[in-house]
Amino acid sequence: MGPRMTDIRIFPILGIGEVEPGDDLAGILVAAVSESGEAFQDGDVLVVTHKVVSKQEGRVVAVQDDDAYRELVEAESVRIVRRRGDLVIAQTSHGFICANAAVDRSNVAPGHALMLPVDPDRSAHRLRTLVERATGSQIAVVITDTFGRPWRRGLVDVAIGVSGLPAILDLRGTTDAHGNELAVTEVAIVDEIAAAADLVMGKASGIPAAVLRGMSRLAGDGRAADLVRPAAEDLFR
Amino acid sequence: MGPRMTDIRIFPILGIGEVEPGDDLAGILVAAVSESGEAFQDGDVLVVTHKVVSKQEGRVVAVQDDDAYRELVEAESVRIVRRRGDLVIAQTSHGFICANAAVDRSNVAPGHALMLPVDPDRSAHRLRTLVERATGSQIAVVITDTFGRPWRRGLVDVAIGVSGLPAILDLRGTTDAHGNELAVTEVAIVDEIAAAADLVMGKASGIPAAVLRGMSRLAGDGRAADLVRPAAEDLFR
Image 1 (cartoon, rainbow over the protein chains, first blue to last red):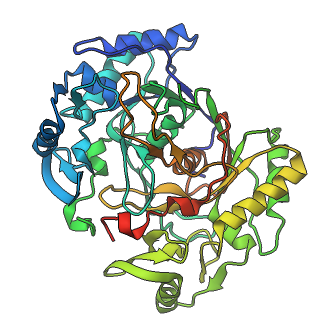
Image 2: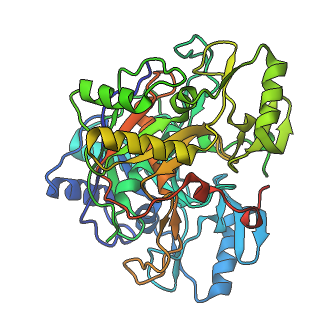
Image 3: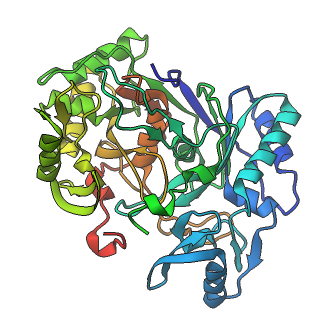
C-alpha cells in the first residue's frame, strides 16, 4: 500500500487583495483562511502562485514596450533553448525551462512584468516558517507557476518552490501487486499538487492560493531544484 | 471570476480487484463506490488509470523477454522521437509522445505487457455512458497514464482519454484583475485532473480509480486528442 490513501480536499484561499512589495504575505494568507472560517492544520499543503510571492519580494519591473519586455526575458535567461517568432523557450537561473524565462505580463499592473523569485525554495521555506509560527501547525508550502509542455497542448501549473515535503516521491525498489518492480519509480508529487491546486484557483479568478488537505505526511524536505533534470539525462535540450 | 471556485474533494475507489478481459468495468466501479458508502453525483469526474481499461479491453500480450518487449514497443510506435540505450521516446498512434510508446510491464502479470487502449476517448465515452446508465448521474470520465517530461525529473499522470468535459479550458479573450489579456489562454484542465487524482491513487497501492468532486460543470465534451500539439506548432520533435 502506498502512503497516500485518504481523501484529499482542496479549497481556495479567497479574499486576498493586491499584494505589494514588503507585505506580510504569511499574515495575509493566515487571515484570509481564518476569515473563511477555516484554520491551517498539521499536514496541510499551502499552494501559492509565484505571482504574489514575486510581488511581495519586489520582483516587478516596468516594461515600457515589447522591446523592453524582450530585453528582460533575455536578462532572465541563462540559455535560449528554442526561438520561433516572438516565442522564446529559455532556461532560467533556477534551471527551469519555460516560455519567456517565466517573465509574465499578466496579473500585474499594465506596463509592468513579473519575474520568478530569486530563490523560490527559500521563499517557500520562509513562508512556511512564518505560517507555522503564526498558526502552530506544521505545514508544507508549494510555490507554483504555469508552464507549457512539449508535445501536449495547454498549460499546467507546476512547482517552482517547495518546503516541507519531498519534491519527488521515490518508489525505487517498490513492487506492484504482481511482484513486478515498478517502472514508475519517481513521481513528481509536488507538480501533481501544483496541478491539483490550480483546479480551485483558476487563471482569471485572481485566487492566488489554496490549501490541499489530506495528503499523508511524507517524510523529507525537498526542493523544486530537485525537479530540474540534469542536462546529461535530458534528451530535449 | 473563473468557473472553478468551489472546494474539490478527491477520493480513491477502493476494493477493485484484478480486472480481466471482458469484465464489466463500469459495474465494478459503481459497486466499489457503493460499497465504500459513497454514490456518484452529477458533475463527478471519474478518473481511471488506463491499466484497468486496457486489461478490460484485452490490450495485454505475453512478452517472453526483453527482445519481445522491444519489438512490441516498436510495433506500438508510429515514430521514434529519441533513443538512448534502452530508453525509447516514441509517438503512439494516438499522437502521444512518451517513453516506450506507453507499453508497460508493471501492474500486469509477469511475462506480460500492457498497451494503451486503441481509442481511449471512445473507451472513456463508453465507460461514462455505462456508469451514467447504472447510476442516473451525469459524470465525466478521464483515463490516465503516467508520463515523463522533458526538462523535469519525475513522472506525472496525464489524460489519455476524456469524455464529458473539455480537455482544454479556453480562456482566450479573458482579462485579469488589471485588465490585461491573459497570457495563459489554454489550460490543460484534464491533465490537471489526472495529476490531482494520482495523489489518492498512488503507484504502488494498486488503486486504479478515483472520483474528483466539486469541479464546476464545464460545458463541452473534449477529447484527449485535443491535447496533442500539432507537429507544426511543436518545437521539440
